Length: 192
Image (cartoon, rainbow, N blue to C red; front, side):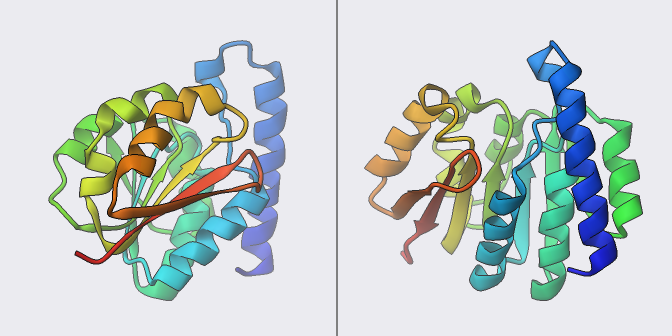
């Protein structure tokens, strides 16, 4: 990542923190990914050689920028899905000079419409309490060797408990929570 992009991301993170501190409505907060978590997630993306990357939860585009920058190294593409379009997401992606396909859709509905085994890295960073209701799609869409990443598992354990139980019960997934940022749960899909 070049210095200009790193500076832009730092500015977006700082402005997001100020915004969130002043915003009483949790659903209107940006809730950006912690920088250390973004660094780990993008390293995982590169190590996995992920080419088809799906993010559920666009917000202001902060994490999509991280993912898209890493995807340049793998020749990949990023699709970011959110229930609403926020103009600042498109503006921030343009400022960063990265390409991300933005979709307006419910995350669960979007995943349900994807084919089996077509996603290399799926990043869930939206309404955590909904994830378990999307099952089995988060696992089904992963290719063998694909990665499921879920943020905020240490900061909001009750909200992701049902999903983590489903992941743990799936014999095709090997998973671990990493104590970085607000907690990142990573699950790797075994080869069939």
